[in-house]
Image 1 (cartoon, protein in one colour):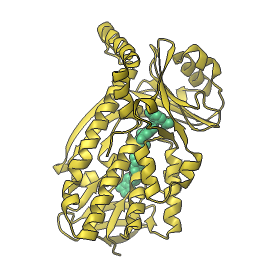
Image 2 (tube, protein in one colour):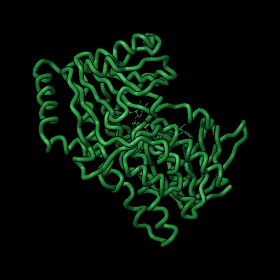
Image 3 (cartoon, protein in one colour):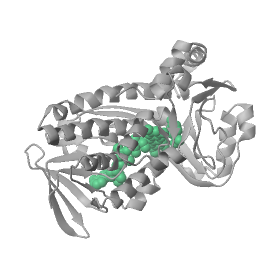
Image 4 (cartoon, protein in one colour):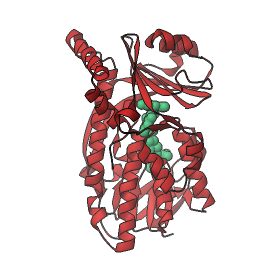
Length: 390
Ligand code: RFL
Ligand code: PHB
């Protein structure tokens, strides 16, 4: 089998790249380790920057997103029992974010890919990459016990943090990492969100909390928890009680509880791999970087990588130019590090760390106060939250 671009991974990065390349007339094949249903079962991101929405439009898959996505004009910070709205639209000259689940975005891309008859090979086992330093890379895998092979011009490693792409070049990668001393316990429930018009980020002496949503009838909440906590130790009742304790009295009163339909614990990590290109292999999305979810940047960074990468490949095929390909890594990393900085900063500001101490706590309190009182400080938060320009 032969194609122009072999894409490893059918998460948001791989699917979006496949769609944008297809629109430009560039052949691609996606190889995915899991089944499509498994990929759709992972509950992850929920907040899209305008740039990500625009890219979904460019890929021709923005219809349902515009219909069902819920536009947010502000976020709220809760600390010392009080809510503080941050009008992100007002502070950024009209920019907003859209609540639309990663599951839905993935489903839209999968549906479009299927409708266009584009090849996706699910349950591809033992994927391995060969010849990425030459001009004829080859991807090998096993399908139901049989060995398969795909030759291509380029390989796009869109296979997430635990994928094979970065592992293939591990001797050539410089990794920068910070692991945080806590995790997030997330609950999805078919209850109306407590704050349908704003994502709420809470800092409380018991720890961080977050109120988000997937629709007007489906809410998504998180609380900071110890890294070694087990999901089984958290009954629904315990979760709702804990969340209430971390909010202001009005939100706590208003929260509508119900049975959880998903509950999971995720560790928090900042990670950047440099560079993001190795010969004819490109890394994109979580394969190259991870940010703690506090700033809602992971999926959006995956989308901006894909924008840079698709433009570089389109330029290569249309104009026989190497320029975009040569600059891909530098362009992408510039934006990645800014989002890494923002996500680290917001995580540090909003969580309780085991080693903060009394002095550190006073500093955190002072910074929160300054942030909501100073228009300049709020603007810095807002312009990063809505997404820095590409
Ligand atoms: P994915 O989604 O991990 O997809 C990679 C795909 O590659 C497959 N794969 C392989 N396929 C073939 N061979 C192999 N050897 C393979 N190894 C892996 C995997 O099965 C998978 O299907 O990476 P991608 O596409 O780069 O997308 C990244 C996003 O998923 C991620 O950044 C976000 O979910 C992060 N994130 C958030 N991002 C936001 O922008 N806004 C948010 O509000 C937000 N909230 C979150 C989040 C992530 C969270 N968790 C659980 C990490 C909230 C949470 C709790
Ligand atoms: C979510 O809706 O899952 C979500 C929202 C905002 C974040 C992280 C996750 O910062």
